[in-house]
Length: 289
Image (tube, rainbow, N blue to C red; front, side, top):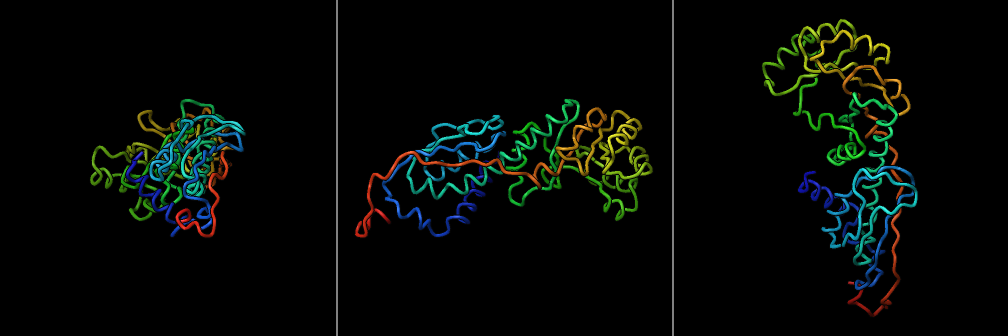
């Protein structure tokens, strides 16, 4: 996790939500302190410890306890507790909950996919179909759920897809240009949609071949044609509901856009422990500054 990038993102998120100040929490005496407990309202997998720790440091809150990422939780389980100024706890609440609910939802979905597939020979990975600005965190959440990451950015690997094939006049030319321009340390992946393209990708000696929108039966047959030194990937339309049918297909990787683009948040709640210790009056200017 890039902590510098995380802090920059959290700063922007806080500014987006708080603006020039939380006028509702401003009704509370600035001397008031509280404990806050965050609990799960659904079964799932928790993810967001880095967010909790970084936000707490930025907002001068104390983390009393926190579950590690990847922890399986049940409804009612305590995820973490915070201590600090009541005003600060409340103005931080929404950014904190939005992020941990979203990330925990991704971790939960990933865990479900891995468990449904139940095939340790196949890696379950994400895609680049992520929320703008949240890719680093979302891909971390996939790892927390037991999955692996595909490309983080376009400069991580060459992936020759249908539009590249069209623009470059075929797979053979595309792979040859990639070998010449990308360097020997950069893997080259080719997406294929037909048997003709598959044979061309094999002849071009691509490092990885992605089978796009193939049935499990087709995957088994196509995988049998690929030399063992070339890795294979299945992608396109695979969901948590259908992934079990891809068990035993022989591919090395299954990439699933659903992990990040269609996830359901893991519902959580933050509750304060502690009451008003200082009454605020109209004349108590120092208390409401």
